Amino acid sequence: MALAAPAFAQEVNIYSSRHYDSDDVLFDAFTEETGITVNRIEADADEIIARLEAEGDNSPADVFIAVDVGRMDRAEEAGVLQPFNSDVIEERVPEQFQHPDNLWFGVSQRARIIFYDKERVENPPQTYEALAEPEWKGKICIRSSSNVYNQSLLASMIEVHGEEAARDWAAGIVENMARAPQGGDTDQLRGLISGECDVAVANHYYFLRGFGGEVDGLSDEIDSIGWV
Image 1 (tube, rainbow, N blue to C red):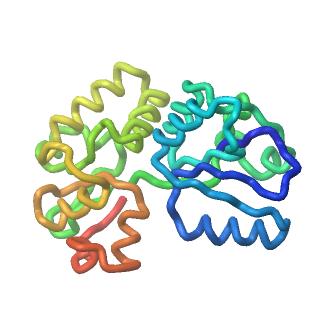
Image 2 (image 1 turned 135 degrees about the vertical axis):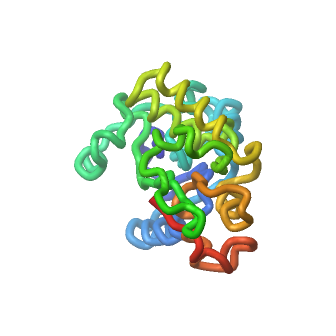
Image 3 (image 1 turned 90 degrees about the horizontal axis):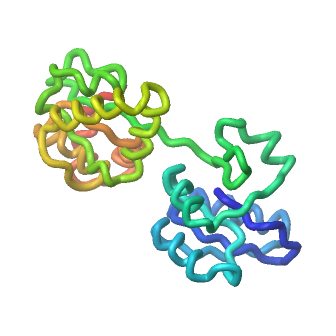
């Protein structure tokens, strides 16, 4: 989340690429407590960044909410964020989830999980690093590297192991793919059920949606999937 300079108005304008009911609950509670109206525009994060660039200093946006730190990096590179200061955020948000120059802060976490087929996999890979090991050749479903979730995962590998090791790791993942990358995270889980792959990488909530409702090609066989 990124904030504009404080404004003592009776409304706040939010540009958001999130589309969750939980956000509606939070915004409604905020309005009830403060009397401040929340105006929200939803769009893809890159579309919002382009809009902020076009609007420039005349943008009515007060808050930009995205779903991944990678998108915040893009917003920072585009120059559409400005620093803020808040004692409340300093107190409640751990330092590692705050931008060093106060351009954004985290409001939630999502986990990139290793999933596997319970019947075909007895000893699933226990780490991201293990996904590049030869034993998983032709067995992994993962979406495209153009997706920001995987870009963020790769960035974390670079941070931990360095660029050269992260490059070798990424090459190992490609070597172990069961198929060319296709679809979103739900499609990687469907690949487990269809038997196209034995291991898949996806964000945790895509799996949880299989429990919470009828997700075609997933919910009926959700119990066959394990996770690390």
